[in-house]
Length: 542
Image (cartoon, one colour):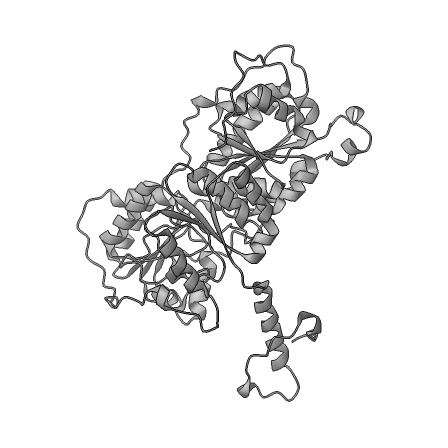
């Protein structure tokens, strides 16, 4: 960071308190930062991070809201693929953070959340405040959308728990983990330093590849396919993985689909990427799904819903379907982010980038695909496309950003809902980071700060194009970027409205218009939006 780095205390500081031991363990993990809103339930850990480890590895990042702290760790993980630490104060801080944790869960990013609680031993609680800030099972607040949680009862158990949590969050499929530390455990004076787990011994792989039979079957399907289609979803930010995806598509002449919910996974200007990505399935991409005789899905978000949308466009999938994802390991009965059942011919429970690597190993000639040649006429530049309404349109904003950033590599951390996929130019995995997973408004500013933190020193300019609602709900997250002097460009696409609600209100108003007695449906037209307060309630059954 540009702010002056703190100095570690001189000499060897002895481990005297439970929180010293926790800080020592955290310093041995690959954790550069810990985002937090200071709170009394982990005042012991706070003190040890300053006076025992010297506020280094992890270095504390002060935030103004717990939701921002989690969102910053989320944005950091989107760039690096590594977990960042977050500290949340008691039950109330955890309640503040819940939506951001859900976003990180849906986006499958690693994160180590250190929680805290007032004294579990009732005899040690201060009047009033410790009682309302103590919970019997604090992890129950978020258990449906974290990968693992624990509330250890001793210093030794806390050290093992944190070491285990760090290992669990890094293993694919990644998701946040939560460890809650009793304030009394932290402030316990130790008669002797405890044994610190040797976390550096852990060389376990973060993910696992496909078995040999799955690779053979997929290769057989690819060898028979004449019109293969690859659907690239949640994949790594590693440049070597990016190059392998391009090589695999080129080897088989497979067309490629990507979407705006996930980060850049394939060059958007490549001839094998014929259609711009979208948040929802474009009609042209639905046509490719219907025409493909083999679909290879690599951790595509909501594969079943996408196939259903293609059928709704009149293009049901008729070819073989191979789906590679390890996401089933996180599925539970509470959250429905596992989506519907995929009608697959082959399910490969593995890291999709490792499947790509395995499919490239055989060096055999491949019969070229038989997709019709794409139209060689390039589309008009986005700068020449203007909105029909007066004023600055989204295409104009995209063109202005390209001009302003010309010659400077940038990372689009976030884009608003109205952004058109044709305006996304991605030639590197860090050109675009995708959405927040859970579609929660207010996450953009915090994630932008986290991405800026991870990108510092890379030469890339972090750019977040945020909706006005997103900024208004989470704008104070930008204080952390200002305080630590992080370079970050935030552009607000202000439509002067909470526009998503307007779209739904218009739909409801149109439905009322169609259901009025005497209305001729053959002459129907969209109803004009009326103020929400004046919209009539829908009648039962309409």
